[in-house]
Length: 262
Ligand code: ADP
Image: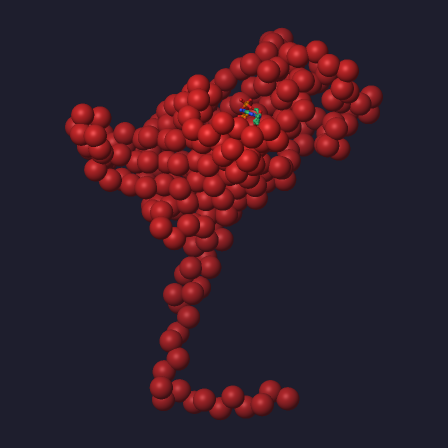
């Protein structure tokens, strides 16, 4: 609901935002890969006050069959905001907004997944927003590509996403809820840093061409940071796992002299 007029000061005279950030400062982002045992791949993400859980299943046979594509896998994303994720209870179940977000995330992921490797299959991505504070489509997409990598699904690259916006006439990175509600514009983007390919771009509100270019510049740099955090989540998961498996099994005839260290 960008563009609503309000008396709230979103950016003060020193250029500081209501949560203490500068214009180009992102909220803290933490990602953990492989958090669910019963999914093929998963990720949990906290981004400021957003909390998102993502589970991936597949590639598996696509049902109903009429949805199968004989040349490639289809990617089906279900973005869902839980009823307790926002301050007023959200009516459970799909609505126009979640259907739209599911569609744009599916399309962004379909672009990076080697879907042609899996004809007739379906790759199912479930995004559950446990707590929402603006930027959940970007948080969901960011978590989803980590969960896909965790599932071992071949992809061109990870997909980092971030929203840039305009609040009190300033271009600001990673809008919070107040800035999203009362700001002038919201521009979520997803970009592969390695190639500069843009996989998602939406715009709510108005920006001048110059502001738009600044926003893209902020977004590009932020996607690079998000990308590093995504890679780090996967490295942490798999380095812990390989350390676990590399540990030699104690053998029966091993010298058990637990010599009192003291
Ligand atoms: P995004 O979460 O990607 O920024 P929107 O711009 O549509 O998507 O929503 C902004 C924020 O508004 C959400 O993150 C959430 O905090 C809040 N919001 C969205 N839908 C609802 C709803 N039905 N009830 C209450 N708050 C909502």
